[in-house]
Structures are given as structure tokens and as C-alpha cells.
Image (cartoon, rainbow, N blue to C red; front, side, top):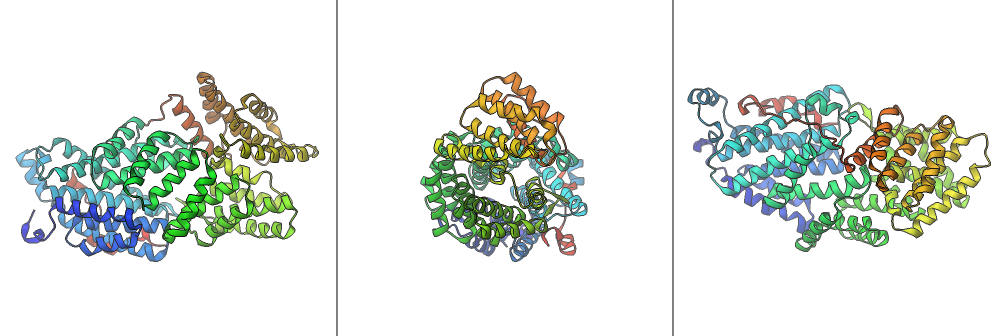
Length: 585
């Protein structure tokens, strides 16, 4: 490294250690703005502070989607990439490398390697943030290009790490290893998790994913390696097991390991709101919904407003599970008034809670308020990658159906609880499950009298079957699902119910230990049904069940990186000229 130009840069080990100590402060203060400000003060002379400032600014922008936060994220990202480009190895050295035939793993200084790594990580984070604002194919192509740069640089960094014979510092080596393992783990986990139908952008980029590789890498980062990336890995693992598996798949998994990890972290960082959220999620998953609600209320009362949405979101859903409609309406309204992420979904949720309460107590004013909200839902559509996401599409269809059906919906709260799997909380909660069973039985008695619309009755019968499954009354549940299968032609409006019923039979067979039959049913569900609203949800759940049955959902192959000198990406001048419109509105 040219000491004349970069002699004032903080040595890489000192930069890593100092930035880690500054980042840890967030677990004591929960003040993301303070962490960003501290990083900014040191970002001119510390590579890791510059990277931390960029990543934390982008995290805040992703959480708020506020234009001011987006502008700050854009500025900090540009400055970080500019610094990285100054520190990265220069192109002209490539010719020397080719002539000398040296082990290229030792041709880079530690600072140069960490500059490459930081460049890749910040570019990757920027691309993920840009996806939240991407509405057309032109932007998608640009984002895909950036993601390709990120993955290729890290692949080459991994190759260099394996060949490198000497490091200037063990701290430098350990953090470099943690970063490349973290990226590889998260990438493999995402790709192996998603069903093929949802992998169009991934297939376009040529990425593959192997689940065993994902957890080998992530476990190494979390349990064997120190530093910033280990901390990020811990949070990624907690989020995956407590939220993605819980609400995107079949229910909680790996709970004991997460309990041990979260207990250790809450003991070490008792003030951390992130670990308080995780602790309360574990309490909720373990069946004590009311205690977890008290914990989320405490977060709202005591913590920064940035974290309130998490509490509002959880309390909205858990109160719906408990049939506490006033509380559900309260938190849904708070979300609707403050969220920018999916206003259509939260508006729909407030509407169905008002609609359900209005019907139960025969309150016309409440029903009129619900109707006004349903009317606005289609106007709040947000397109990601040029398309409406599945859950948003579902609420728009339901809102339109509300008016087509004469201002009436069939079991809308149960449908939402089912789609996002908060209905799992009926497990082990007999009183709550019985309350819902009584509600659906009453609806069935009403719809049984309507011989002209069999679909309403069968729709409620599906949710009766789901409740019976969670009450572990598998034979009775299957009777409900088989009735639906036998009357498939009755469904003219909601085409999702039949494939969902078929899948539920497969899930019950899995719970009963009939693995071969379960596997055959789940594969038929994926193969035989298409073009229905909840298709993506069904595929994700079916693939999760197949994984649980030992069926691989891997997409085999690894990414080989090009020479780092060929992976310039976007230098500081082009960043300024381009103005990085992917972070703009």
C-alpha cells in the first residue's frame, strides 16, 4: 500500500476492533443514529467505520423507507465505495502478477483485501435496499449487475483466503473469513429455501444454493469466529429460525438452539431491544401468548420509536389469535398510519378486524368503516420487480371480492392467520383453539342453509380442518379436507382452497409418520395446481415439508469469482454521475 496516500488510514486490525466496539454500543443504547454518527466521525480514516456507517444507514432506510433516510444511505454508500476504490488493488498490477506467476493469494495487503470485501458487502446491501424500490426491469437489470459484482468479488476473496499463506494480523484473518463465510451461508440458505417458481431472478444471476453448506458456514461464523460478522450472523440465524421458518414455513424449528443463543445474548446485553424482541418471540412460540404480549407492550413503552412497529405488528396478530378485536384494530391502525412497507396489507388487516367485530356485535358503523378501508386497498398496491407480491395480491383480491359479494367476506381473519401462520399459536392452547372452533362451527351452521353457494360452506370447512389439525384431531381434519377435494368444482371464486386442502392432507400424513404418502401428496400439489392466488405460499410450505421429509431442495453448484482486477463494479466517478437512482424514489 502506498504509504504516502494511505499512511493516515487506521491499521486494519485497529479499524476492525474499534468499529466492533462502537457497534456493540447499539445493544446497550438501542440508538442507531448514535452508532451512525460515531461511525461517520471516524469514516474518513477507518475502512470498517466507513463500511459500518454505510450498512447501518441502509438498515435504517430499509426499516423506515423515509426519503430522508434513503438520502443519507445513498450519501454514506457513495463515500464508502469511493474510499474502497482508493484502497483496492490497482489494475496495472495485474500484468505484473501474470508475469511473475506468484501465488496471487499473497499479492494483496490485508487492507486491500478488506477494501475488496467491504466494497462487495456494501454493494450487496445497496442492491438489497434497491430491490425494495425496484418497479421495472431496467432497474432490476442494474441491481442484478451489482449483485453479480458482489458475489463474484466475495467468491474470489474466498479463493484468495484459501491460498493466502501469511496475514498481517490474526484479527484481520478471522474477520475476513467470517465475512466470506457469512455471505456464502446466507446466499446458499436463501436459494435452497425458495421453490423454483420464485427463483427467476436467482436463476437469471446463475446462483445456486445448498442447505447443508448454508448452515455449515453460518454455524462457523456464529460459534467459531469473532467480530462484527459473527454478530450479524447471530442476528441472521435468529431471524431465520424465529420468523422465516415460523411464518414462512410450517412453524418454529431449532427452538432449543435459539433459546440457548438468545438467553446468552440477553444475559450479556440486557438492554438490547433486538434480543428482547427475540426473547418475546420465543415466549410466544412456546405458547405463552399473553406473557409475550406484555413484553411487546414494554418495548413500545420504553424503547425508541423505530422499534415500535415490531411491537405493533406482533400485538396486532396475537390479539387477533386471542379474538381481542379492539386491540387488533388499535395496533393495525397504528401500523396503517405509520408504515410505508405495505400499506395495502395493513389497511386490509384493519378492515377485516373491523368487519369481524362489526358482524359479531351487529355494529353498522364499524362495518361502514371497514368498507371504506376495503375500498382503498387496491389503490395502495406496491409493485416489487414489476409485480405485486403474493400476500399483497391476496388482500387486493379479497378487498375486491368484498364488494362483489355484497360487502361480505368468508372467514377473512382465519385466512390471514393461515397465510402467515400465526394460526400455529393454536397448538397447545386448547382454550383459544376451542374458541375458534366454536366460531367456525357457528359459521358452518349459517352457510349450510345457503344451498345456492356451496363455496362459502366449503371455505369455512377448510379452516375447521386446519383448526382440528392444530388440535391434533387428524382424522376429523382429513374428513374436512377430503370433502373439499371431492367438491372441487364448487370453487368458482377462491381457487386456493383446494390445493391448500390437498397440501394439508400431506402435512397430516407427515405428522403421522407416513413419509412416503406425505411426499407423494406434496409433490402432486406442486405439480398439479397452478395459477391460483396463494400458489407461492403453498409452494413454500410444501417445499419446507419435503425438506423435513429428507427431500433435497438444493440447487447444486458454487459461484467461481473472476479476477478481482476485472471486477471494478462502479468507481467513485461513475457513482456520482449515475446518482445511484436505485436509492431514489
